[in-house]
Image (tube, rainbow, N blue to C red):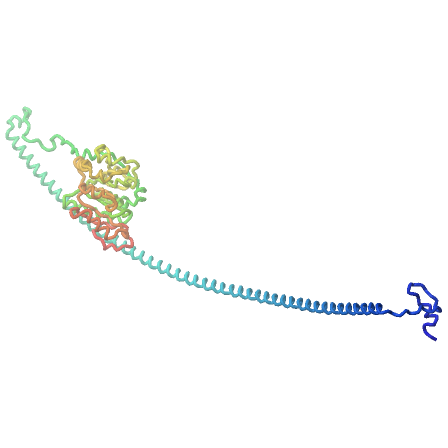
Length: 472
């Protein structure tokens, strides 16, 4: 039996329209395909085949695109990995470079620290060497100072002994002269009495009548008192001043309290100065220095106090450093007035000068001071004014000082010393130890000229300087 004739098969067959026909009914007879149908079928088959080919091509293309995409992705991953590797290498390089730089900086810091430590050690060694040299210099200076003090003390002791012997000789000579004068006076009185006895009538000898005639010569004890010396009266009439010991000590007036052994040097200077003035018949002494801060006012004040203790010497100290007057501050006098007015004749010397009164340092009262509390803008012109010379001559005539000390400005700073040349007889030049040069001293000598006697060069601030480079 044909399979298509079975009932089971028949039940499942349907028509093309969807209606079910009985299986027993025979199918419509198959109409033969015509050429058009066959061509359409071929076209459909060709189109299907082309679609399949296109699909396959698309699949292949998609597969190729996927492969390229995978390759691109892999290339990107590879490049990213390479970049990451390069980044890691660069980071490692940077880390290594930073580490090397830190190590180099650490080495440099260590080297600098070692160099600084070595430099510090060298500096400390140099400081110790300098301190040792300074200590040696100080010890040597102290030894020189002590030696100078010992020489000065020995010289002062020798001079004091000579003065003592001279004073003893003078006193002995004075006593001898007094004895001779007394004997001569007694002999003269005896002769006068004898002559008077010869001329008196006999009645006068018996005491019966008074004697009315005076003897030819009256004894000295019976003479009228002589008039006082006007010079001494003028000197005693000067206004007095006093000083304070502590103030003088603070201003280094060492000849006042005489506690500093160096005061003996000023005593030696005083004695030699008096001898030089006596030998030449001089009395006016200028005190100056080549430059400032050499100690000329310090020297003038100490020398004046030392001279005040010479009983037979009347001393006058004038502050003619009128541009920068300072002597009144050193002595502790607050307002001494204007020395310029005295030099111009506007103030009498007796109204301006001050004499030393009672004082706690036992300074002699035979010293007077011409102090100045008002600076002068035209000091050089004033010193050249003829009235200045007239004023000094009037002082000498009225007060008869034995020594006139004139404190002048530094010789190389102004022309005051040259302007005041007619006012003094000689010069004391104060040299600053470690400050004044030989060239400056030569320049001062050149400015003063050959006609100006330099009585001495005084070395001040001599610590650390060879004292035997200079001599008085």
